[in-house]
Image (cartoon, rainbow, N blue to C red; front, side):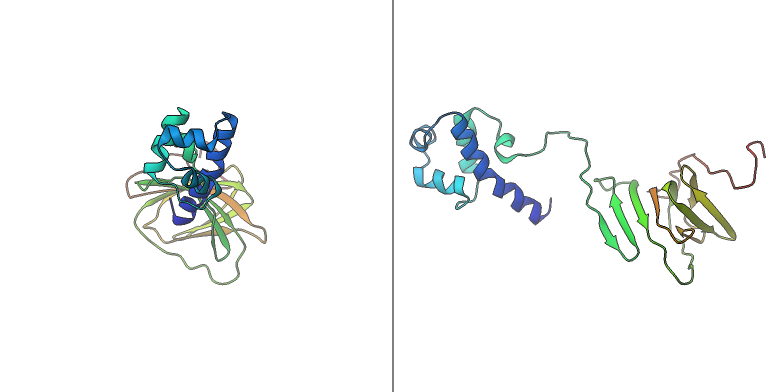
Length: 197
C-alpha cells in the first residue's frame, strides 16, 4: 500500500469512530471512562486532529466490541479482488491484473494507433495474448499476423516481436507474461488456414 492509500485509510478512521460511537448512543465521557483515553484525545481522533495509533485503536475496538480491522476499514482478509490502478504510457494504458510479484503476470492493455517504424524487440519470457476488441497486428520474426476480437496468440519472447493496433482504431487485449518455460497452450489459428491444416 502506498503513502496516499495509507493517508486515505487513516483519514477515514475518525468519521468511522464517531459514527460507531453515535450509533451505539455512547458519549465521549462514557467512552473515555471505558477506555482510559481522555475526552479531548477522543474528540481530536474523531475530528481528524489526532492520528490513529494502535495504542488508541485497541482499547476502542475492545470498548465497542468490534474487530480492529472494522475500525480502520481494512479489506477483508483473503479478499481476492485486485484493485487495479491503470498506468498511462505513451500510446498505451496498462492495467495490472495481478498484485503479487511472481512467475506469471496478467495485464489488460489498451493500445492507441501510433505512426512510425515497428521495431521488433527480444527478451526472456513467454507471452500469451487475447484480443478483447479491435484488431491486433503481431510481427513475430518474419511473420505478420492479424488477430481480431476473440482470437489468441502465444509466443516465445526471445523471438523478435512487436504488436499494436492493426489499423486506425485502438485495440484492447489481455496479456499474460511468464518467465521462460511457463507456457499457456491456447493458439490462434493463422488466418486463411482451416482447422485441419
